[in-house]
Image (cartoon, rainbow, N blue to C red; front, top):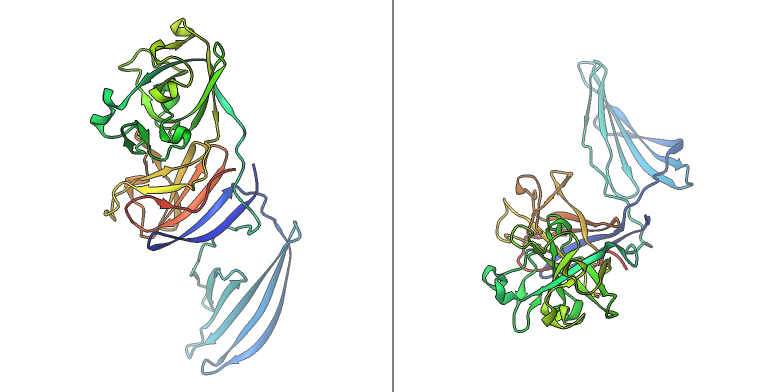
Amino acid sequence: MLNKILFVATGVLTTSLSVVSGCSSSDAGSVDALSTTPSTTSAPGTGGTTTSGTTVATATDGTTTAASATTTTTTTTDGITTTAVATTTTDGTTGTTSTSTTDGTTSTTGEVEPEPEVNLSGGPGQCPESWAGSSDGSLTWYTFSQGTVNIGDVNCSFGIQQNPDRVNHVYTGNGEYFGAMNTADYNTAAACGACVEINRQDTGKSVVVTIVDQCPIATNSKCVSGHIDLSQAAFSQLGNVGDGYVGNRAGKGQVSWKYVPCPMDDNVSFRFKEPDNLYWNEVLVQSHKAPIQSVEVRVDGTWVQATRQEYNYWAPPENNFGTAPFRVRATDIHGNFVEASLELLPGDLDTGFQLCQ
């Protein structure tokens, strides 16, 4: 797993969009030494003193963090002494403010969770050249006129066009090379947006397609594990469309396929399902080079896991995104992630980042 993260602020539509992109990080240093150098000044009007100083913490990896501390001591007329301590780190975040009194009570307020650390020299993660797939695949082909146009979209919710059949946010064959994955490998939309390199060993031909749809085993017995129902344009790259059905199971040809990074230059984008609804929503992730593993939403200061729907949108618990601007993080199957702060707007919200190279 790469340990590089990149932070960028960029403009999107008419709003601001802040983004963090990279891969999962780890190995935070532990603190070995702590030293404080205080200075004392009087605090007018309180009858007490204020002590301020700088705390330096050195981690085992050799990094040093400096924090300033302010201690205020106040004695009231009833004899109770109150001491308050506030710390501010060099990155501008404020830590715990604690208050203790001579009557033995202690309260803690003002905890502010720091933002994730970022490495300004980092960058997008890497995708392997290929992974997984099937050595015993089979293929058929379909057109939108056979029923997709009546529904108005593919199962992955990317949007469609006709004449010729094309899918939005698909870069293989200028949007014309796409496929519907069998139910098992579709795996509740987990294959959505994945690119697949298909090879016919008997003809030596190959094509790369993007998975945008499901081939349902419930209504089509051919849609077993390993099967892909291709667009007619993609199928024609592998042989005669008159063949109809190819592969060992069809008794015609030999088919294998594997997952590969999608060939694209565009950035990852998000799309809200209901861009005018502050209280209920789902989000779609588009234009990613590798399949999306998880989506998280920050609600009331806590990252919560969203659940992928069969139509490829992601829904947090109770469809609650918290308060706008909404913070959303998408992570691909290789651990690369992009994080964005999104205003509730219609259309594609460009993050300015791709997940992997």
